[in-house]
Image 1 (spheres, rainbow, N blue to C red):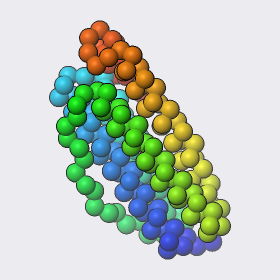
Image 2: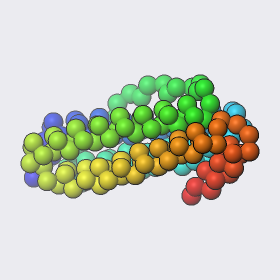
Image 3: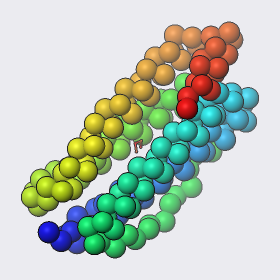
Length: 163
Ligand code: OFO
């Protein structure tokens, strides 16, 4: 079954969203470096790489279905943040936004009876549960340890160990 134009456009838009996510998290990494939280920075860099992998999953899928990948322009990501709590509040809010986008794509694929796309999108539905839960857990830890001192130092070391 051929990929519909509507589905192809929606998937191309999601490539942009995933790349924008990569760009935002890399900007957060640069901010964390600037305030000497190198563990947070490396966690954000790994997160950014994961977002690029998400973009490439859509890229590969569109091609596999005989569609045409089209890249859209990216906006400048935020540069300054109020501290690590702010960074993770924004990360969680961003992941919730992305979950909404994935659910819309899922609804479109359902409407179009595009079962192949539903298979791909189910993977993303599950992935978003994990993404939101991880961001939420780190935010909770940050709220417990506070924005500075020994606790923050320990958390920085812990986040720096992400593969
Ligand atoms: Fe691609 O999961 Fe985050 O945004």
